[in-house]
Amino acid sequence: MPNGTEHIVSSFDSELQELNQIIVRMGGMAESMLATAIDALVKRDSDLAKKVIESDKEVDVLEKAADEAAVNLIALRQPMANDLREVVAALKIASDIERIGDLAKNVAKRTIALNQTPPTRPAYAIPRMANLVQSIMKDTLDAYVERDSDRAVDVWHRDEEVDEMYTGLFRELLTYMMEDPRNITPSTHLLFIAKNIERMGDHATNIAENIYYLATGDQLDGRRPKGDTTSFQVVEPSDDESDAAARAPQENGE
Amino acid sequence: MAMAAENLVDENPNIAEHKIIARDVSVYYGEAQALKSVALDIGRNQVTSLIGPSGCGKSTFLRCLNRMNDVIDGCRVVGDITLDGEDIYDPKLDVVQLRARVGMVFQKPNPFPKSIYDNIAYGPRIHGLGEAKADTDEIVERSLTRAGLWKEVKDRLDKPGTGLSGGQQQRLCIARAIAVNPEVILMDEPCSALDPIATARIEELIDELRENFTIVIVTHSMQQAARVSQRTAFFHLGDLVECGDTQQLFTNPNDERTQGYITGRFG
Image (cartoon, rainbow over all chains, first blue to last red; front, side):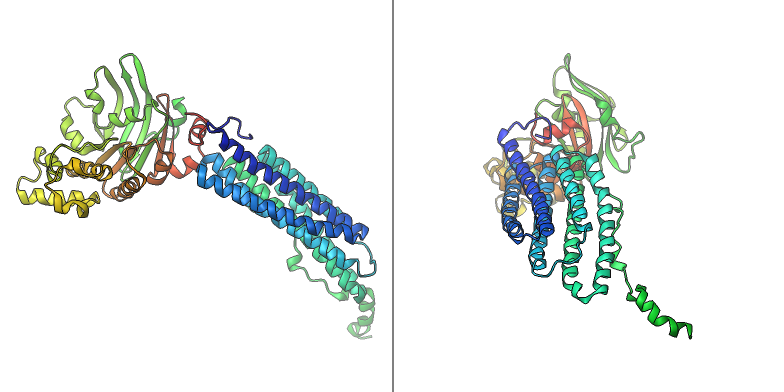
């Protein structure tokens, strides 16, 4: 047990441990779903993408199992203090991991759609961003297993980097779309894929917050630094050189 | 060990906020020290619960608050306990008067072998309250109403108190305690002999009584402490380990011993 000493009633310990293991398994599955989905995207492999879609069902089943285990613990054991935080955090973490699974599934679905369009300019930044999110997820799960609040804080800060990468991707993909309308369909899918990965990072930070609460009993306060500025971003086609050339005579009055 | 708890009480406690202020209270039964230099403030119109494993000193501390330890042979209490700023261990203090101000309810309901009416009227009579029959009638009705028992017994006030159910008997004892207009009510595991429904009634009653009285309750049920009290004090081996807001103590206690006890890891 992460709490050191054991309960007098040993079945209480085994129930907590079981809940723990469900969360860790869910986390591992969601992590590998993201990895497989990106692999499928890069290799344009629709069969692999279908496997990701399938495995989301297993994550959903595990989430239900976690919910049930947590509700039973509350009803039958009336957990207190760190035990209570353990159960409450597990409930919340399970729902974040389930969302991560859903997002990975959506990446896989869009990969299948993308594979029906001709290959376009690859957005190299997407696998890079996915790698970063994957490593954040891995660290988050390690922090959970070890009840390591310092590591949770560390993960919490790293999401800023993901946000910044997403902002860069957003601009890049808009540029492709402006270059050639035939890029709009694949670029839109890629943009949503990037957004999904960015959302996974957000869920990982939620999990980190819950780990911090679980380990310390305090809430992580203060606003997390945000690097995603795309909500305010406007990219004008007039940046384009040919546009500028076309307008130049009028504007200069020549 | 007492250091941790001492950090949680004010250096200069506020009498307006705290009904009872205990400082450096130690209790000895002969050679054995049952309570070690306890400092605890009891908030006015609050419910304070005292929890801890058997033999931790919580009941001993409770009994210090109305000098019930005086009647135990070989028991010695040192330290300062004040009630509204008044030293309750002052030799000139009238102990009977003190116990009228600080009433007590015990683990097992112990009604007098008298009628329901006389159970309530007994205290006011010996304290010279309610000389006239009408006054006594009023005290009996008001006390039973406050204890949530009036409707159930108003038609059989002349029947013996011992004929009531366990839960009713306990509420009768609470009515008897409040009949003399105390300021503080001490409860020593008041629900441990009751079924869950009767327990819920008593808990509801405790919450209502808080408006008019200051309540200190010793309980073995942590859920009960969590439900009824605003502040909780955890005792262990004669030390006051930790005292804090009930909510905080049960979600995020400061001391490892508290955590170990409330989560069922020792005790």
